[in-house]
Structures are given as structure tokens and as C-alpha cells.
Image (cartoon, rainbow, N blue to C red; front, side):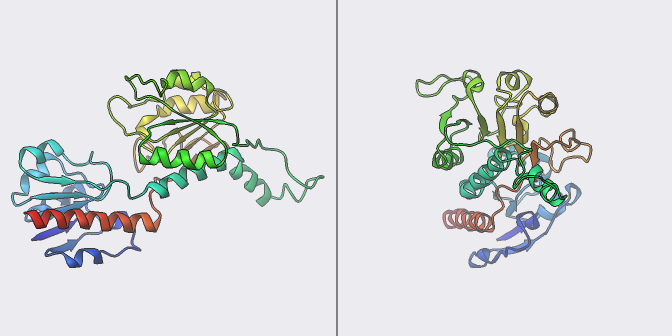
Length: 309
């Protein structure tokens, strides 16, 4: 069976694809693939493995032999799954591979914000500590996490793992109800926001959660509250967040994702120079252990497909 990987370098060049050697496939590896190259590269393939390259109906329609699409990620929004379903093409994704990697990244972001790590480190590098008349610097706010109220939005495996880490720091954890639903155990997000010291997003992006954190909800939050997002950039109204940060509506934000990736150089959040804003380049999932686990899980799913075919 002929298989192609369209964007292997997006998983990191430090990984090999040796896991696929045990499968009865002839594998062609492309480090990257532009939209213009997709049609030609998948035309004769029976199996396509892809991370973020878009496979729309036009491209899929050119691949008459295609039987299987393996998405090397959790989200499948880059694949026209409706087309695949209509034409008998199996689509598999990989989830759960990066739980620990993403959860520790979210905690890292929270700890950095809570301790004003970035501005304090910058002050040390520029000599402020050396010039201090005291033994320390107390220029930046530091929040103790113990006893603080964390509101988690999205309580799948990632949200649950982050809750475990937060409880280890002594935080009180609440889980928001899904938008449009009611639950005896979970309160509505709008009711929790005024009480939250930290809000952390771990939910999927959908029509119901698009711009979930908007101007109205940012206005509900405490001026001392922190916002963490290691889920999807589209969960936040980024223009509203810029306004909230500039106006001191919330105390800080730490984001691993933006609504457009890679972001344009003039993205409004990248244009800000604020000590209480941290942006990392969608790297929460990228621990080598997590990426290797992703490949192993993808191979296992493909192997199962081949066995039953």
C-alpha cells in the first residue's frame, strides 16, 4: 500500500518515522507540503498521514485510491471529514498523547504569570538587582496559588490533569458547565468568572465556544485574575483581550495558541509590550516524549486499519 506523510517536519526533525517500518506500506515522506503541492502528492496514495496540511474536498477528490487519512494530531478541522465519510475514507486522529506535556505547560504559564517571572528576570539581567539598596527586588506582583480559585473550562483528560496539578499547589478548583447546558455539579461560566482568580481553557473550539472569552466575560473577571489558554486561539476574542490588558481589566494572560497560526507579524497581541502577557508558539504539546507517543499511537491505529481491510 502506498502511503505519504505530507508534513513530517511539523512533528520535529528530532523524530524518525521508524515506527512505520513494521507496516506493509511503501512510505514517502515530505518534510513540508504547500497547498499547491497537495493534489499531486496524494493523487496515487492509498494512505495519507498529515498534521496540519489542509485536505479539502478538491484535493481529496483527486485521490481516487485513497482509503485512509491519519491525522497526526487531535483536531481534524484541516480535513473535510464529511467528504471522507461520503466516500468511504476512514479518518483517524490521535488524542491523549500530550496530556502531561500540555498540562505542565499550562502550569508553567500560570507560575510564570503568578510570580512575574519574565519582567523580574529582565530586571535582573539589566542590573536592577545589583543596584538595589535592599537584598531583593519587590517591584513586581507575586501571587501565592494556595487558596486561590481556579476555574477550568473543558474537563476532558487535559482539564482533569491540570486540575490535579493545581490541587497540588493548594488551589480550589471549579469546573464550568458546558455552554448551553446545566448541571447540578457544575455552575455556568458567567457565574464563576467573578469569583475566579485564574481561568484556564482546555475545551475544544466549536461554534458554541468560538470567542467564548469575549469583552462581556472579560468584564466579569476580577482585575486581579489571570487567564491561561493552552487549547485553541479562537476561544478568545483577541481584540477584546488587548483592550482588557491595556485597561487593567485583568491582571495578566498567558497563551499558547492564537486564532491564526502562524500569526501575522502585526497581530494585535504580538504588538503589545506588556509584562503581564506571555505568548508561546503553540508548543505545549511538543515534549519529545509526547511527539514520540503520538507517532506510536498513529502507527497502532493504521496497523489496525490494515489488519481489518
